[in-house]
Length: 378
Image 1 (cartoon, one colour):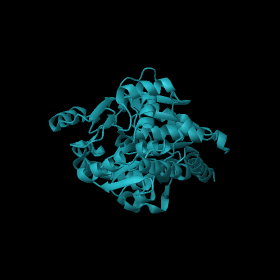
Image 2 (spheres, helix red, strand yellow):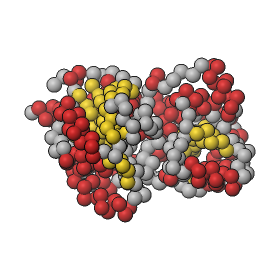
Image 3 (spheres, one colour):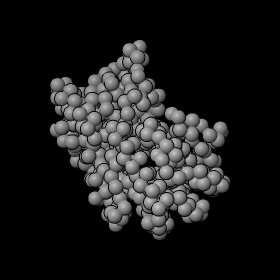
Image 4 (cartoon, helix red, strand yellow):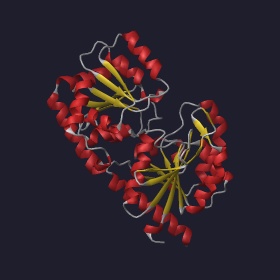
């Protein structure tokens, strides 16, 4: 089968335009980069308001079904099973993005017989009680897929689920493409500068427990630098209350921002700070975005792929997890030394160009799709 005729169905629990986060960006970049190489992509995802049922996201059709309910952030779309079956019939390869426990169930309910590839984005860390109930289904699902892709060797070698299936695990680092992000005009940049200033430390992402933002707020207390936090999520109110109780006048909650504003903030910041403190954060797309815009990176050591993206004293600083003093000191160092910040930012861009482009990622996924289809045809 020629590459141009390979049809890939991506399956995930939420997608653009309903949500915009790191995993959604990864799927978007995979679709763009493999599409440029002849792959035909679709995305299947539940939505709280699936009207219209099909939307176009950057040239990729997104097939949406009704989100019926959620349990512990896991969406269920029981009424969408018939549509999922139709989309699987269309596809040559079903590409799951893990974790989404209901996708495991759909896989067996629909009796998917097509070649199946799974991108393993992260271990399930927090819901340990529910994990005991889910584990048998998860293990059966991971055993059933034909290929598993992990985003870093660090995560591959430290995840029990991946270690026990090493024979079918390959590593494809996440990649981004500059031209897929908005080109910000001088006027737009000036407008964002007028609102937020410049030389601040920037975080963007969902405001969830594993992002470590409570540590970032503690790190900002009694410091001379400014922090801008962009995004929304379940911890927004709690974090704002913490900032208020700490008396932080140097922290700004920007809320959910447009892509144009995000790019402007990336251009204006001194560096990108990424305080995620548990393995639920497996890679860190925000770190890649910072590197793409030649910004120094500050992250925490969790034994995950974040320390594959960020390299100590080459692209930025890696501090111990859950250590607000060390985090604050690292930010203070870059705040006071502009030349060091520029040097590390240059190193981050160099590493991005060598390891983390969407072009390289897309070519590797096309190879995986081609192998799966060939194996099925033989």
